[in-house]
Image (cartoon, rainbow, N blue to C red; front, side):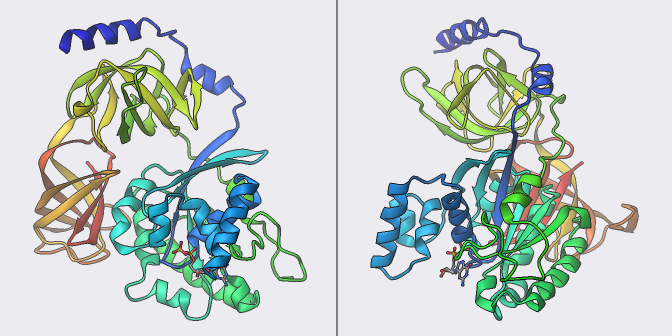
Length: 443
Ligand code: GDP
């Protein structure tokens, strides 16, 4: 009831130790923590590559390895043992696809990581948008075998769409895993061909050359994933292995000193002790046990009972952390995926209309669209095409255009069927009929 909830919040708020979180975070010598998303055309070898990474880092115990190994031998698909490390549920295994954003964490001597695995199938793009909005950087997996890179890159391939999406969601750093090089005998020409074409494309998509790196590898044989490449295999390659590239990718500067915004990825019942729990990424600000927060759009207050990161209890967390939070004083019906937990003194607005600067992937007219923001997607409309813009300078090119062609930047007005927590700088993706028509930044 309302009274119980209020009392519960008050009780929990008293446990607040008023830690100076920004100071503690700055003083700490905590290991670098980052989250990355894995994208690429279906069958590029994403699951195999990530499974191999976890295998070779010994994240998976020997018994599980043996079990997967014998099961995959039974069905005559040896590589499946690696993919299964990621797709752990029976249902996913039976269907042979990686369905949701499976989260796997691992660490090396230097850094900690969470893999937000994104599936390659066309209708799973909403999951990819959600995964990317939680990521610090992306690993783009490319199948280098004969004809496969071309199939993924041209026509209806997903390499381009995924890349444009991750960039437009705000990811600035990308590691291109030029995978399956075992199938082309580690040919330098093939690696170079892919590197050159991808560099042109990635730069035009808005990635700075200094934030792009290319790693030749094979998820199947494990070469250059964790184990460095033998010079005899590819004497032409002088760079590092995939794991070293991952370790060298610093998370972006994080908005720790901004008001708290935590986007809810999941809501679940934690048990008698913790009746309502959520997981999600802190987009900005800090959070500590005892903090009182506002859940939006419901506008209900709640208090933080406990914080966990990778199952470790923590007194506080900061922007960039993916965490689980046990909440007091709120009912489950007031929280759902895509909601935002916000500071009470500076809450995120809930809007039904906004103006955005968009980049069109397909032709945009005044039209019905689904608006995606992280895990949230709601129906809405692009109501007005205000002006097209020069991509480089942002200046007006044409007022009230009749349509916005692919590759064109423009300012548009958008209306939503329901209120959504959204503020200036927020990244949204517009889709229609299963196709991404554009992406935008809220003004
Ligand atoms: P995903 O759809 O991107 O997750 O791709 P999978 O990991 O399921 O792999 C797709 C297919 O490519 C499977 O048949 C794998 O056996 C094969 N494969 C994956 N990685 C490699 C590799 O490094 N070399 C070769 N030759 N085949 C690979």
